[in-house]
Length: 299
Ligand SMILES: Nc1ncnc2c1ncn2[C@@H]1O[C@H](COP(=O)(O)OP(=O)(O)OP(=O)(O)O)[C@@H](O)[C@H]1O
Image (cartoon, rainbow, N blue to C red; front, side, top):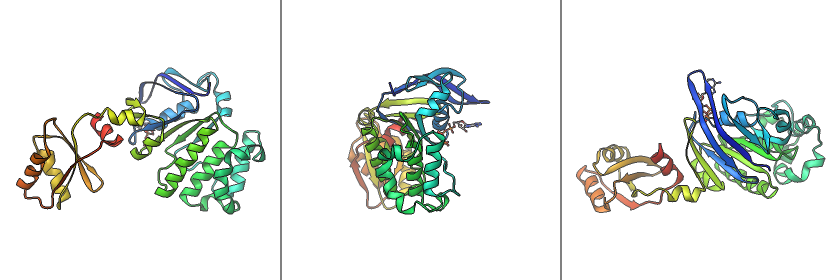
């Protein structure tokens, strides 16, 4: 059993309740996404599951081992890529990899097949200091280092934060490959668009789960009328729409405003409202909800 079980886990820092009786399960071999804004409690949960922090209450197990009692065993069988840079900047790419293999009592050669597709991309720079790598390359090396002992469960805390769009995309392709190797993956991200690449996601806010399901089901649960709206003066339109009697929410969404309205509001009344406010080049189209819309609605 390579999954993760979390039961009623709470953790406070002084008066701040970071995790509030959290309960959920990650299935063996699943790629599970934890979505939430800064301060939602993602890192705290990762620290508990990787045995770096003890919960105040509740219990959790990783690959069948209890986080409090079996911490030494868990540490040997998990890979952890913390949010912040976890490599040794003055060691070269190859030296970092060797170092991580050594502390887990193994050799790079013995586990090379698992990391080959990722490592091959940074191998031309194997002699370069890790501190001198680009963001995308650092991320690939950190992933190789987290995998070099063939972990059963992989914890990735905001692995794509601060990485360019192409590298982010490549990273998710790599995670897809790791799934084929049967590794359970718990990954946190503040980027809503990445959620669709997980099998299930949990939306976390102030230590509580707001929703937990497949990305498709999370989106399908959104049952309010949603419109993509824009006009010449974007910000004035946003302010005006927030005052309209038909408006539930109006949020910035790329070049459009995502407008959630009360049921029964039609396109014509939105256009008429914008015209009465003096707006020009008004576009109002029905929109398909994204995970971000669901999150904003639940918040
Ligand atoms: N060592 C600490 N001492 C005091 N408060 C803390 C500590 N670590 C985290 N917190 C607080 O606990 C809450 C949850 O923080 P946590 O770092 O787990 O969230 P997060 O979702 O990972 O966000 P971020 O991406 O900003 O790290 C926040 O309110 C944070 O300010």
